[in-house]
Length: 355
Image (cartoon, rainbow, N blue to C red; front, side, top):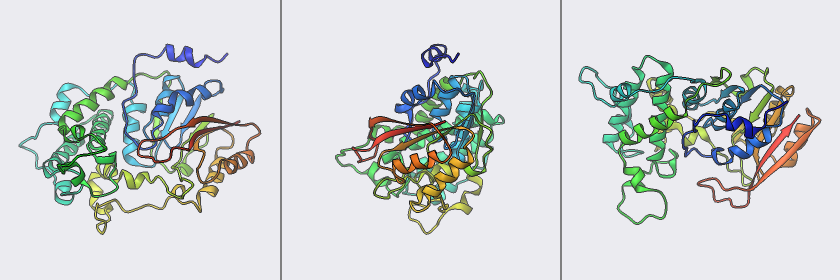
């Protein structure tokens, strides 16, 4: 007999997933999503487009064998910190080491040399160079991942719109009346935010019933031996506007690839983005066939798809594709749900379950 979600959640310790400002995060929707998954008979599961990791984290709490996957390296490292990690915490002496400028170390200066007046002040840029290098010196990979998570979250919260899509440090520094954002958060020192997010991460760590793992692969390169596959691919609105996570968070991807960052940058762009990567999920002419290929690949698993009612492809097209591979398909609607930074007040959150 399946244990109900209420019984499972009652048995979970007080671990809490960290706060997040990630575009498209399912944090506020997670209870609704898990409620619909609780009656499904599965043990192993794949979170194919893992993002923040909140779905993987909740499935880990329910005792599932979870594989978190994301094609962005910075998300993969965060997945290591919060999903793969069962016991490691970042301790006070390690935090002190990370936040100290050591006289014996010759620190790199890539961010300070190349990102002046783009995202952060020069003092902050130098601090980032120093801190990412100190993190790289930690010997334990899981502790290193926790520190990296905290650094990424500190970067995001100090950014207008919480994104890196344009050169707009001036928004934060201008002495004008604002109708959005939180200047207090923007101006709070990096060091304070780093400590804050380390505490959040440490509180989130718990020993899962089953061993969970993470991967950093294109979804089409993943194995298929999962009871259930949860899919939340990048969203394309009815207007054709795509959510480009690679473009929105390229600075964090640069931090994750610090030693190779110089070779990845599009130097012609004003905001020094990483060179774009072709992605079928952000191409409205290709993503319908991509969905078809994805459903075919995982047709032996229970398929769960998070979607939006005004997305491209249309919801009836998703239903038709699922019907090619599955006999029983359900569609659930959360109702109107507006993501942060979205002006779309009509779109509804949709969950497809195909068995």
